[in-house]
Amino acid sequence: MTVPSSVYVPYDHANPATAAVGTVTDEWVTTPDGRRRHFRLYVPSGVAVGGENVPLLVALHGGLGSSEQFAANSGFDELAESNGFIVVYPDGIRAIPERPGLQTWNGGYCCGPAADRNVDDVAYVRFLLDLLATRFDVDSGRVFAAGHSNGAIMAYRLACELSDRIVAIGVQAGSLGIDICQPMEPVSVLHIHGLADTNHPIDGGRGTGVSGVEFRSGRDAVKAMSVKFDCSADPIERTMTSNDDVENLLWSGCEKGSRIELVTVAGASHAWMGHRAATSGSAALVGEPYMDFDASRAIWSFLNSLSANGG
View (spheres, rainbow, N blue to C red):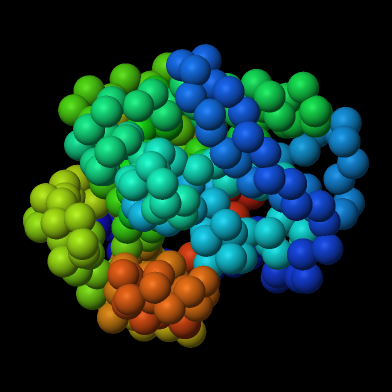
């Protein structure tokens, strides 16, 4: 059951993207498990080393993606520049050791070598958060994660297992990859999913992508989080006045002011919405993007609204 509809305004807490004129660094680190891991960091021009009370976004690429690919595909650098947040793009574990640029995350049941080897990617993200906290005055109340596909599944895992650090996640085309989710604190969730996504169908099932994964349901993930955080049983149904393809379900009344939202987009494929693929190879994997909804700006608006509203 849903509550009668109201209006969904997806971008009201996010400034439009501007040219990314900040600083990009690529770094290799040795993690506590002894692995050499890579990450890409974008610091907007208005934020200096040691800058005060800065929001931080952890942006997780999809399966067979990379930090460089997701930065180019998502446009989070440009949003970071106009909205004043730092964005770190970690890299997963290489699917083929000698081939950079094809990485996966251990989100639980998915995906690839990272899951098969039971790589502790949660510990890796915690390590990065600790590292960045030594360089910047990161606002601990505004540490967020975003992810696409396998990266979305990984973001859900962070919500379950790193809730003492991650306060909210915004994802596209994911699901809950672990059977036991016991967060220490409530985590707000924005889940975006295209109804024409066959790589990771919203209701679960075998994807048409090269991985051939039997995916879990995205709808079930959202519902599970709403129950876990004791949200209202019946979500409010909201629509965009300018786009009939977009529908939003909002679960409110959750613990400690957290929120759970599901955005579905009719006609949208697996590709990151509102942004062209970084390469022709990426486009071949995920299809053509739906360009009338900007997933990146909607995600940042949601995350930023939690600060604005005290949630």
